[in-house]
Length: 216
Length: 167
Image (cartoon, each protein chain N blue to C red):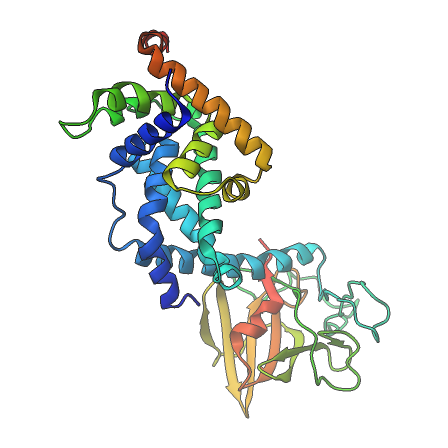
């Protein structure tokens, strides 16, 4: 009958011998760093996309409202009506309406995902990231300043609009004029064909396009 | 961001973690996977645990190895852990190679983890309890049961062999 001491001594020796030739790969730290960075990027992407997609249930501009002491009404998704379309005359001949929107590979809804409370947004801002009815748009707090992104619609995009390449947002166009950047996003939910986001040229575009998520 | 202290931690601790994972999973490839996954968990929480990351890493290895052991029947069969232990150095003690280590691998994973943490990693009962997320009393009782089974196996190796063939 072996004592516990004998047994544990034997066990120590056996476990040590069984693992004596095991060594981790020399670049293990680099491998872990790389995998960590990849996982982090993936988490960030999902973190942006999921809340935005969750809010995309309705059409129009939906605002995610946080607890803001001066915000009323709270937790209400507000649809901002797009600019009205000109009324068609009843006597006009019935022709197939010509939509200037070509067949698009991408279409978007306008939403707003969660953002931190802005420190110095304008006095009429009533929510952490506030909508503004007139002009229609949204205030973002980013890089220490408030940036207004106007939201509207258009039937066509200008001919001089150039494709805008932002990862994960295909089919966007933009123009830059007098310090104002205008982004055109195809939107089947929009009666006029294109969502139009207007912002200062200095505002980061990748921040502004968080307002939109693919609708399909 | 991960600083150079993370690299130092990996360099210092990964051999011990790999050996522990190997003893818990019985397979070198799975042990390497477990260690990488555990170090990823450490990296994610590095800012919070950088003062004392080793216990967290040990616990992650134990948990991941438990998951591996639990899911082993869902995977296609592979070379058995006991057979792997057969590839020892030529002068290895026969008793260790053919009886003790297979008996360790035959223990339930919790008892095996207790033995590995206490007698291979040289952790105290308290540290082992923390690593396994159980009480000190559980560690003591699991140690007792595990040592009893090993003692039986060593005192009557034929019984173990018959059990092996029965598997």
